[in-house]
Structure formats: structure tokens, C-alpha cells
Image (cartoon, rainbow, N blue to C red):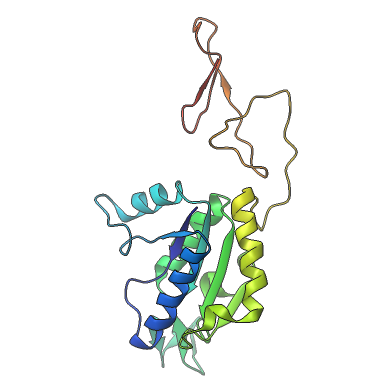
Length: 208
């Protein structure tokens, strides 16, 4: 099962061991992580590549590593009182794309990383604050249940932020694009087409 992992291509050396252990743990769970700039390299516009990769994935993990620290400046005209630690802007872009595609999402960020998709209440998915500098962070007991629930959603195609959807049995659905929570209905073809009656508007699947 392929999983999109949103993370920066550069991280501080203190986080490298923990990330490697985490990626190995995904492999042990039978998951294949996909990341633009790490496992996949673009030959077209980066956003197009991200969309193409996500179409092949059944879930997404967003990892918020520190990328930018702001010690002084203004926010909405007021001076900041404390340092602000920000993740890569691609976390926000990729989390939003995964959300729009109804992929089950697991959200994790290093302690202190904030704003955007890592602000509480922005994403309808629980956000886990973790010390990414601890090599064994992914083995913490508190995360195990969350990972198992998220993996179960990936396997069933049920997003963790959308309730079950009742499928209309009178309408044919695409076996490739539909999930238990998001049916994709086939479109009727003109009666002049004798060999096929239905077509998927997303993947062009044909049904007689």
C-alpha cells in the first residue's frame, strides 16, 4: 500500500535517525512511502507531480519538521513576543491536496512547530506533537493506536474526517475510483455506443 509522506527534503542532522527509523517502521507495516524530491523526482511542475503521486496513494502522513525560525518581526502589525518555528510551506500545500482527495491523514509535527495546517482546528484530523529529535519517537505507545486506526482507514478507503456515505444502489460506481466513503458514479454513454453503456469521468473505466 502506497502512502504519501509530506516532509522537507532537508532536515537538521538531529532528526535524521528518527526519520529513518520511522520510514523503516512504515515498511514493516507493509507501507511504501512516496515523497516528491526523495523517492520520486519531478519531470514536470512540482504540483502536477504531487497530484500524480497522490492518485497512486491510499493515505497521507504530514511531518512538520522545523525549517524556519523567526526571532523578531511583526504579525498583524504587532511585535512577536516569542520565537516562531515554521515548517516547510509544502506541508500546507500537500496536506490541503490530500484533504481534497479524501485521503486518510496522519498529522505529526515537532514540538514548537506551528501555524497553518498545524494549528489546532484547521484540519479535521488529530495533530500529534512529537519530539522528532528522539530517535524512537515513532515507537511511543501513545502513537501506536493512532497509527493503527489511520492504517485501517487507509485499507478501507474511509477518510478519518468524513462520515460514511450511503451509496445509491441504482447507479453504477467505478470499481477503481470509488471508496466506501466516496463513491464515484459512472456516466451514461450515448445509446449509439453499442459495446459500452457507462464510463467513469475520472479514470475512463468502461462498463458494458
